[in-house]
Length: 195
Image 1 (tube, rainbow, N blue to C red):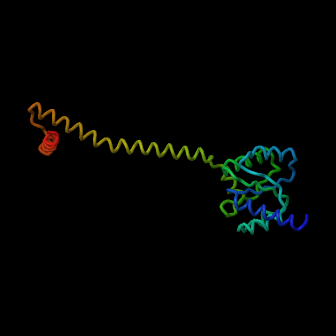
Image 2: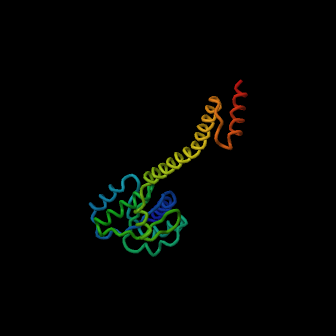
Image 3: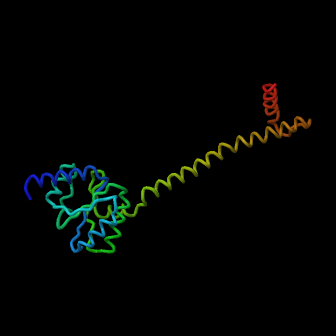
């Protein structure tokens, strides 16, 4: 490969490291071309999966401000650059690796930090972004409903108590509580304001 081609490849890899939500480095030794096509299809539009040269990837990672990938860049390497939901792509890679043991997750990069293989697997255990947002919305909705009922309960109790006192006053009965004079004053003030 000529020098300008290498520089362009490094620039493209650095751009992908910078603009992707995450990247997962894998070893694909032993996978057939058919297996790699199936893997690319399973990742869908959320990620691109490409075989890379280790030396060019090392240079590109450094240009993107990522240090610590050197140990993971040994042997044949392919990188999944994730543009969509990270958890969904990590699940796809994990599931494909279970069915095809030749695919080995070596490391990952997320938010400029290097992740080991176990951390990438933990990302795969997360639920998708949509499910997490739905759970959050449900929890917030439940808490809002509780808050509304908590705020409405004292008001409705006070309204019922004032209504009962007003009925007792109109019937000419004497209220049975010590708070009756204050309640009567409130009712009298409300009656005076409405006249």
